[in-house]
Image 1 (cartoon, helix red, strand yellow):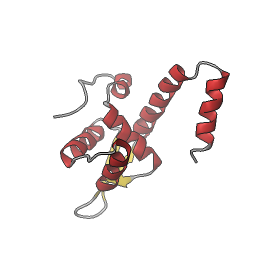
Image 2 (cartoon, helix red, strand yellow):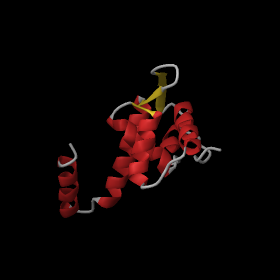
Image 3 (cartoon, rainbow, N blue to C red):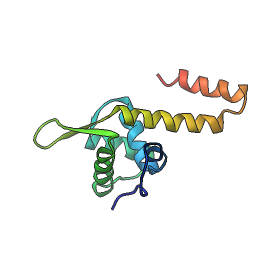
Length: 119
């Protein structure tokens, strides 16, 4: 069963995704990856095993929503990449978070420092 709530409308697609689905999008914002690489990134983040029965249905749903594109690397391996809508979803989440966190110049400076040290 899907982790997402019922989704209707383009703006609500982004806002109704689960944290797990959003984390998948954020991981794919860096570069296209195959499923096991996404799984490892999620396991590093969560500090626990992520089972296939959770990962792949969520990837399939993100594909169905048009946020992720799935392509075949070889007969056994699929690669996943963000679509333009998926990238917009990541940016929407960042923008919403920043609108709540950045409440003054000190916090803006802290965020700028994080961004500068991230690449």
